[in-house]
Length: 222
Image (cartoon, rainbow, N blue to C red):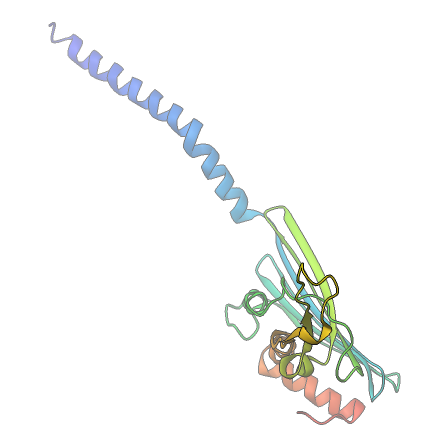
């Protein structure tokens, strides 16, 4: 073989390798990179809220609203008294990673405690306070949300209701109601969700809420 052809063959071999590698990248790696890049830079939005409406007492309602938008956390609390005074306390958007004010951390705790799973409950126990918890999530262009209502989370955590089951027998067309069995429906997660909202936030945020409730409505911290 002519020695002058060797460099030329090496060049063409390298050129073919580069072309093949480019084809593999374009067909496989580039779409994957584009997808990961889109996920990394796509808008994300998490909103969770709890509203308590009171039938009587110094407060008419309380509302907690927490939001994480593209990694920035915002905390808002609002109270409306029967005396007509409204209190609004807010934590400005922060990208802190500390769990005390990171709404993404709160969201994970709420999901763990049944945010997406718990159903609405009929009024039971102390029906003076009516709770509504709602959630909205947007991530990678997909979104979803829900809300549910209940009263007296302590009742559901300690007493609950009863679910009755009737045992049917094909030889006895009329069921014997005395043979019904019941199951107690105790569900502590309603109380856990309420505590998640009430206890979340930096101490400065929680202290301001407690101080304003005492000053404006005469409600002592519990």
